[in-house]
Length: 305
Image (cartoon, rainbow, N blue to C red; front, top):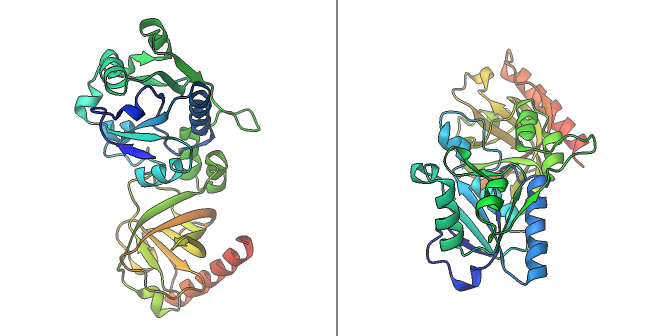
């Protein structure tokens, strides 16, 4: 798969493609349905298939002070999409100029002149252009030479629509298993391991410390988790919060990795949240904190097989 950050000078082998477009945040089963539809059409028509998404997430662009939108940072999104049989991946900069682009210019300049797209595949509620003026009906009315396939929303076993907004709600409530069920992959926080106060080491529970990335913050508290180290998942107790027992400042992710004693400073790691265990609390002493972490570790060993 080849990556592009511009719609200009697209190589011939990626032109006349079936183009799947979306934010793909969370990359849930509904998003997969869009991509799978594009792949199926491309195979039938003998065309390449490419994906187009935008960075930053448009919601984050318009509301930069809110940490409420991003479920899947771009690194994670790329990692998930790379598993699929697509030929090209366009990650276009969503800036002021792009936000002000009319629906007509997006179609004519980006899709027709730039990519020379043969067909589009989008979700049925897809909108584009300034003030979201463009949608599937707009495409079919004004650009019939550029066929657009609208993929209906996926529903779960209870008939509820699968959406990124539901995933966000689950994460804010600490319901990480339900969020993972809609995405078909665990929610994870990725970042570089930084130095902390190393108080955990003094009580026998050393931790890795990661500043949460630009993704949505899940519910503050303690989770059963795994940490991906060199491709292997290691069980861990993860705390997301302000560490009130030791008068911490700012939100930090701390994870005690079970049965591991390596040096991970400076490494970029992924922490996958599997189950919410309990709210964060302030303990009267470090001994009380130590006892609770031991209980949490025992719980993690029991529930993560």
